[in-house]
Length: 102
Length: 470
Image (cartoon, rainbow over all chains, first blue to last red; front, side, top):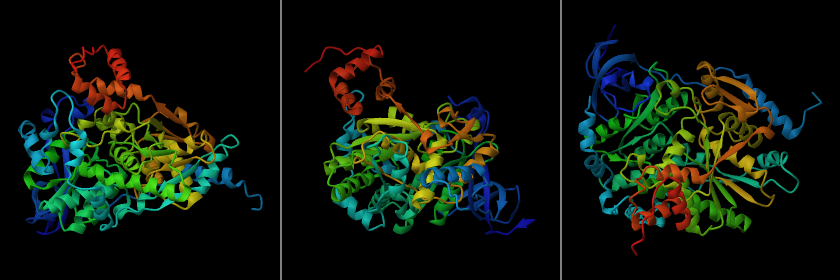
């Protein structure tokens, strides 16, 4: 699908290939490229995964591969974690005692 | 996209233009530099700092006595023991953390000097702080974060910080793991001509002096004494340095300054694999130890954050214990705050148990909490990265393998790092066979030691103190 010029997107580009990375890195890091993600408005119409240019919030023009259209914030409070509840119960019970009336 | 060698070659020129400080003016012959002159070079008095901050909804935060947390700690203390625990609720600053104190001064300076924008390299609260202050001053802002591993998996806490920065109108550049972030940062400074709102400039440190001063002033007003201990979460060292300088400025000369970091021993900070195996993105030993033992590894030629000059003790605490105290702060005091800022609270909770009841221990920060930036998403994220999460004795936690949440407040424990071992690590960065008188004077100030002590440290590393020329 062709995305319109001006659409807000997220792009990614490789800044350094593994062989261009600085020395002295742990092996696992040395073996992978240094990547960059950035958001902005499309400078021209384009399709997903095409090389595109965007204009960023500071007004710079940056190019990269179109990875996501109208990117949303996906971070959350995570899945239910029973240990959080266990800590809460421990703290309340050690502080105030167990509630025998319930 | 850029040439590391070219940037390295022009590094000093780019730096000088972007922080408007000629660091070479402060260099001594040999290894040292004139720290006091660097701090004075900001051109701001303490009163200027106070007025810049109060015009920006920064500072004058509440100092809250944590009566329930204190009572909870006393349950595990001997009779007559259990110091009063107070916390400086820094989450109430603009942008939700003490970092706004630092950003307020840097951004003010940028505006004053006519820069069009500011840039900061930070995955932490400082990004949101710079972005918020830049918004207030009508400046452009770019924040550079280390955020993803090579699988394109991001740390939830850093995603939340990116969201906050964007909410304040900033451009956020997110990178995968690696120290070359510094070159991206240099390249951007070069390309845009923006101001380098470094955490480690004199502005970044002077901004925190008000925090230490406010603590001393309020404790004296309410309790007619200096605080016995102030605990500072330690990463880059600026928080501790600025707070200690503020306490000294007030005259709180009996107050002990303790550093606190989350123990991430065994995890490599530049490792792609380890990146998402930690549940703290700051306030941990992965920053705290290297920045303490080599402060000038920062993003300016000479860091104004020099924690060994000010710290009296250094404690570490495990990840599980910090999550535990974060939960306790929420359910016992009604204060839901971000976990990393509570590192010092976890340490204070344990220390208070061995201090007398009328003693005062101050935890000097809190930070905002939210999606991603909370112990529940962090524990959930840890599980999804195959980290075992369980209740037990936190002392047996192995960073990167498990997180052990104390099964009782009694089990929350801390470890002390001997300052002399940190001092030795600091000294190892120098050629100890050719030190001159001026070098020794500088090292004494850097390491907060007397002549004999310094000579013993140098000798223990095989160095030689040559005959003095006086």
